[in-house]
Length: 155
Image (cartoon, one colour):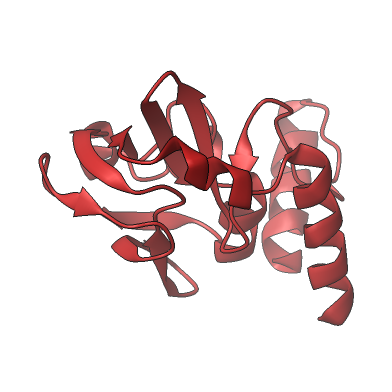
């Protein structure tokens, strides 16, 4: 990570682009978060799911995203896919239960969207939720930020 940061700073300096070191991950206020670092954006009974900025930052450059099939069932807390990076492969768990109604097929050709814009173009699946009450077991942005700080302090 340090060598990548040094290379990026050197390249930015050469290209005369300003940079700053990100000492923290972005957490979006209106989303819900799982303790396995997935986020969910709710719109009625529809939920958009992806991995958090914190997760993608720890993974490094994402090179492959395993997507489920449209129509597949997902269960809260259970694996539905994986994200492979230059460092590791990590399971992706669903923060809600329901039916997959859409997958982000752009990730097949551009898995780096998970790194570049995890909360926008880097979403992974959209789910028709079967139990909106499950959202109560997820963290809000404040709780997730604190959770990440405590988790990082352990390492």
